[in-house]
Image (cartoon, rainbow, N blue to C red; front, side, top):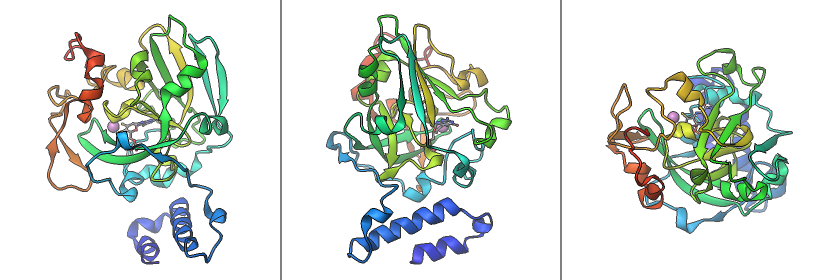
Length: 309
Ligand SMILES: Nc1nc2c(c(=O)[nH]1)N[C@H]1C(S)=C(S)[C@@H](COP(=O)(O)O)O[C@H]1N2
Ligand SMILES: [Mo]
């Protein structure tokens, strides 16, 4: 019970965090149920089962759940990192569909419930390196995006994939500001989208995604800066030409299409050589491709990575 009391007396609790407190209670109750005092099923609504993918684990210490869910970038709600946790409860994650269209033989509108069952859910611990030089280590739950792509069979013209997030200013108050052009759009080259590391993500830390982390479905691309991992997506479109992302529109000199984590290429306003792992005091060196060079560097052989930043 200690955690619960601590949460309640924090000054930041002047604005009540209903969702968070409730979930916290659910977790405590689930813990109690293991002793047989409460029926576990009653509290399992947010749980998401997954097999541990041993090939995708890391020696790094995981970032605590509280930081993963209370230090976010989600401009549809706020440009502050603390506020999405308080504001994202207005996002309605059911019903939810994802339209898959464009250069595919079998365009289809998928219901989120069907996507949850499409392939085996795996827990994968990935580093997330934000362009703002901080990082986290997060146990995501999902399956390779390639599993979904196989279902729709891209045509020979499909060279890129464009992801579009939800546009609804009633649910997403940050969209009333024009800090970015809405909806949030991101893109990958088709081989990047097909890469086994690219995860179609539904959960983290054993439960479905909290709204502030991009519920009910997002993409995670661990060798790229965090903004290349779009949250709360509603559309996946296969296209012939390189998509223009919301960040490229906002600052073409600062945000390139590729945005592979690269300590050798500075952002226009700061160095990318180091990062602060959330929770750490000292900075650490940023690794090429965020530590995934062995798996992905060959996707870019022969390319000038200074030009294609
Ligand atoms: N739709 C949408 N997706 C988004 C963002 C956003 O503002 N809107 N921010 C991006 C950025 S900059 C980062 S670092 C990660 C943060 O993910 P997290 O809050 O789950 O750690 O989400 C990315 N995906
Ligand atoms: Mo980011």
